[in-house]
Length: 117
Image 1 (cartoon, rainbow, N blue to C red):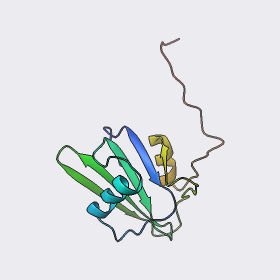
Image 2: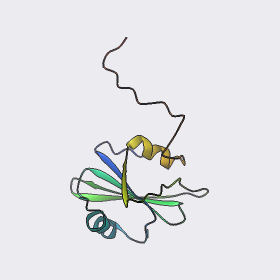
Image 3: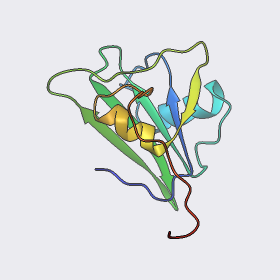
Image 4: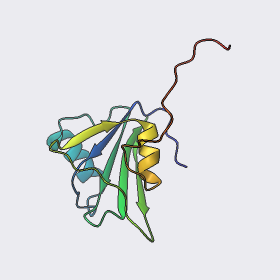
């Protein structure tokens, strides 16, 4: 599993993105289309119309990472929204990458623990 421990936010570009875009095109979309900073410690996730390919864009110190994932079978449970971009947790991103919906009804709730009982 991909882990980007420095990514503070995960943003999904809802709807579909032309994945022929590479780093510069996706970074411009983040900046101009969404009004976000592509150089922030955030992970930006894009999906194609067929929902079987994703691209993840991430700035790291002195350059961009561009990850591309293609499913051989099946599709991603890509959300639709009236907003262009939505913020999700890294946990929800793992669900999405595993083919699950972002709205898991049976997932264990996050527990904030301060001491051992």
